[in-house]
Length: 354
Image (tube, rainbow, N blue to C red; front, side, top):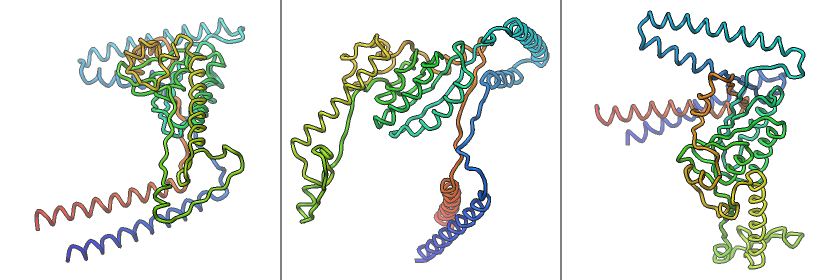
């Protein structure tokens, strides 16, 4: 009984604190945002070459003798100075050309897809930024991970990637884990597809499923009415009685979508035997290579690090500005987590030490 009373008091305190924190944060943020320009987010760029160089130098400093580290440091400075002088000379020689010579640039983007392909909004901003300066000597590498989702959402995401190839900029898609269904719809747009040996690819098919509660409603004497204009405004429904005619139309629509999917893949990867792979099956990377769904077996880090010496590599990411509800939700979640952790620790203490 004592425990229940204590728990009830704790719960009341927790709710009060979370509510108070939420209200205070709402007032502060609202006051700070008055008169400010709405900002969706910003682009963050990281030079991958520098990141790897710093990690390499840190490891050398830890494992090599100080004299060797100092000697190699001097040699590296000389090498960089020489490379910079050669690059400056090349730019000077090409200053009268329409497109001045520059070292190859690789722009790395990440796409982690959910069922709605929500990351497309960020992908759009990243591609627009890259295409503002990229030319035919450059390359875009997209590290893609998605099991697919809504047809129209992934159709838009694929169209965003197509903007890169339309500008004659090389596009490579790397699949380390999965690019299936809508994910593969995106991947097939690329000039090259690289996959890890056990990455999952394919699933060139269409699926739709929904429950039907008509018999449950009928059993409980609950009427459901749905009024439409147009013979096929609704085919299958969740609450109404489905008809064979509606079911046939629904399947017809699925088949049509599948045909469009197959045509899209065939257009971008003509080497694929579409009738053989468009069965809805998935394959691991090695089998996908045999079916020509991918061009080579390589992980993204293997492909990127192999070009560190020959190209300037940039990680490009669009970071969304959090909305007020997101900020409040995160703050409330963190506060509640701390309170629950404190309560759990106290409970454990009472259980084992009281």
